[in-house]
Length: 380
Image 1: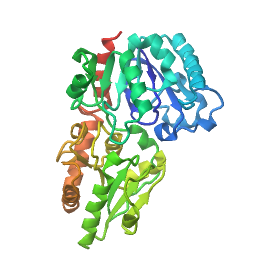
Image 2: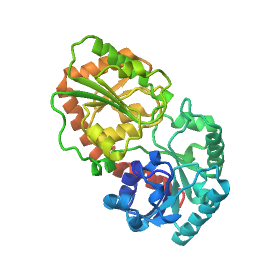
Image 3: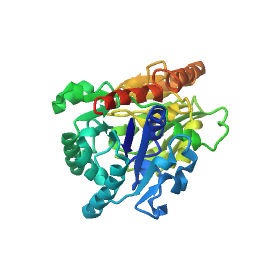
Image 4: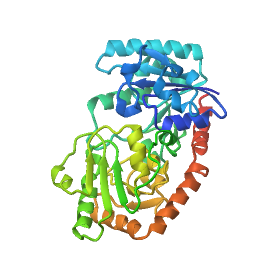
């Protein structure tokens, strides 16, 4: 099949998924450089509205994952500038008409590809990253754009099985139109790592990602402060890394030297090194869909402590690749951390399980891509 992949995300799951799809298909990749937090591409370095992948230096190191000759980077503009946004959408559509794909995967509800969505909606598969909007992020513009795209594109792909029935019931969809696949390891991070050795003797706990109320960060911090109060674990540290506004007072926690707060945008190189030097990653989310954080951790075979919400239990197999706990429970977080701290062999076994399951097993990108191909065959 000739597949066009229309994205506003770049250096995350898409690169690995496209790499897997390319094994049996002809794939063209469009991505937008607008918000650096989405794709790590600097729009100010682009000289044209639409640049070929070979013209974007930041993509050069990933040429083994994506075909740069069939990759196009759009110098984006915000949705608020509707006229310019739609004109760019028209320009993109001219490229797509020349490519004439058999099917199209689109992973967003933005206006970037709106003209193409109107014209090619019958050959589109909408990749729905968030079946339901997160707590504290249910914005009006998101609801409007989601409603428009949901009504235009019949075939949809979710990235976890847990929310499929609820999604179908909530929107009253035909089950035959709703497909599921899954995320696998974020390979791109391995191209970004610069550190070559882990600090010996330290047990490093890591939270990373966008700072938002639904992430449950305070429960993790309270659990760690309780551990510190015992004064039994002098080599234990916690790092909170990500941009955004905390919904609670962070200053009391930052007073502890064992806690490092990196409240800033984390570039891929820094992220890769943070994960590489961690012992365990914690996702204390209050609600969730699936999580790129988990798959980023797995890129370096790091076990994950995650809450029993959304699709996280599908991604973190309890006692196999990490530990699943109940949400909003600092005591459970504390116990899970200490279980792994006190049993280093469990950490090693979990790392081995991650490698077997996600690098070459049933949760590999090849298996994920096969699910997409099955869904696309229904459209072609």
